[in-house]
Length: 88
Image 1 (cartoon, rainbow, N blue to C red):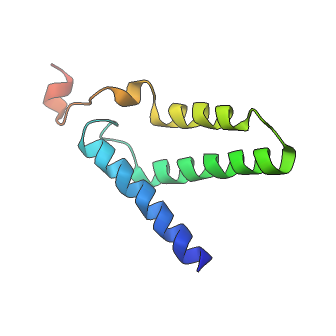
Image 2 (cartoon, rainbow, N blue to C red; image 1 turned 120 degrees about the vertical axis):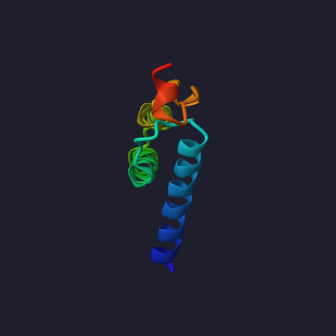
Image 3 (spheres, helix red, strand yellow; image 1 turned 90 degrees about the horizontal axis):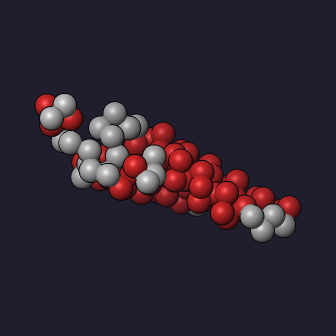
């Protein structure tokens, strides 16, 4: 059951990344599976740091890491759907 839930969660993250790419919120060359892996890894690291080590700063570090992974604040910029638009 845990493996199935984890697999489903990774699928959700990858689908959301694909949608962000399609909507121009992430660069077209972004690998959705890499985004899913990275977001999950950061979340797990935050959880371990917070719960096991009592690190109160872990959530803030996690948000910064996620924003860096997504290229934020650049992640909010629209990316052109075609290469022709990218050079315009």
